[in-house]
Image 1 (cartoon, rainbow, N blue to C red):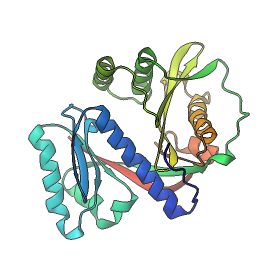
Image 2: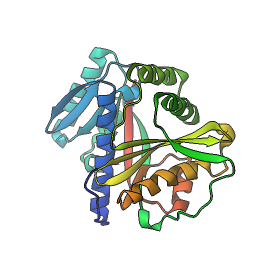
Image 3: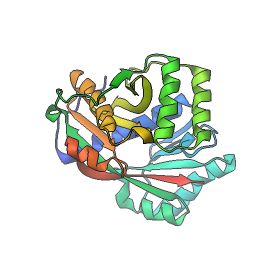
Length: 268
């Protein structure tokens, strides 16, 4: 369990949100058995897998005068391996001009608001939508259900689903103390997912997804609240996430506030 953040000041919140996102990206790379490269000013990994999030830059703190050369140097590692990649740009690196230089170099931007909530404000007595049961993933078969539901609910390509299922067949379900997968079943059928990642002193929410035919019933909200309540029971005081456009108003209604912007840049 990471040391719980109790400082609600904006700088502390933003720093913790960025740490959670970076540590989550690192853990993902480790799960893919990727090769990591780490220096004081940069950290990136290459798994060799043919999708953007299979290879990526976790952090980069380059001097403004070296930006173009450094971006070219890092990009070359991915082009030489002929793999797509992603580049996480958090609040601490946005003021250097990195974003504009990445765009000029051909990286494609996808922004997401960084949001946080005081977990003490969450209510526990809201009823679940009729027929919905939320379960924590505990074995390999449930993990496969989670992968299928998450990829379809997130409109991700079938090729990525097949790749993730192949990885789950290869490695099985591995319990990681900081990671909790949640699966929502509506009348016994898997329809929604979420993931809780405890790092940086905060409870990070990821992979909230609902199948198209099960939307607009409050299921996504329920799959967001359940892991946050679990984190609160463990002593965590702050929940964080990077919102999609679809989920932004849902999170606002729950009490999340926007504090910063995260960007994922993609290299094809």
